[in-house]
Length: 168
Image 1 (cartoon, one colour):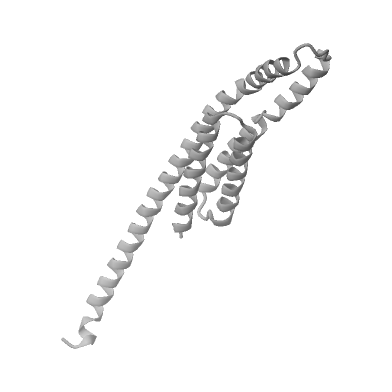
Image 2 (tube, rainbow, N blue to C red; image 1 turned 45 degrees about the horizontal axis):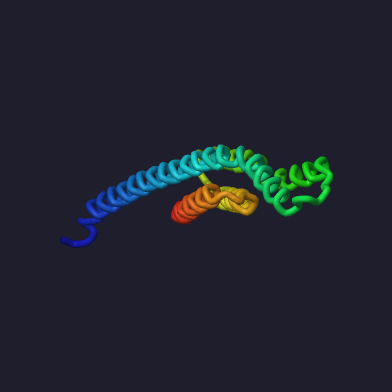
């Protein structure tokens, strides 16, 4: 048949193909959004476990330091108040409660961003902030469980970053 007679059929086919493409992109986008939200939720759960572990860390650290110090200074007169002050300062450096709060706040903000139409740069920035907080938690901690959990979070955040790059 001459092309002029096929124009209507071609337009209908093209229109259906474009509609199908749009529907497929929307389904894929919803699946990616669901995956991202699950990963962020997982990060929140891991941070909860980090927080539980970290609450006991300053006390354990204080006990270890006092024990070691008493072994090293056996027979030497040391001001116990001064020792307690120094141990308290060192133990305070192990406190990651601020980082945990900021991490959760960033997760909440990320959840808000993911419900918007365009996520792009805002989500990338928040991912950097989430990574920064988790790095600080890991660096402050002397606990293997916290370090391992931090690696899990970073792995999840990297997967979220990869998914965000695929969103149009």
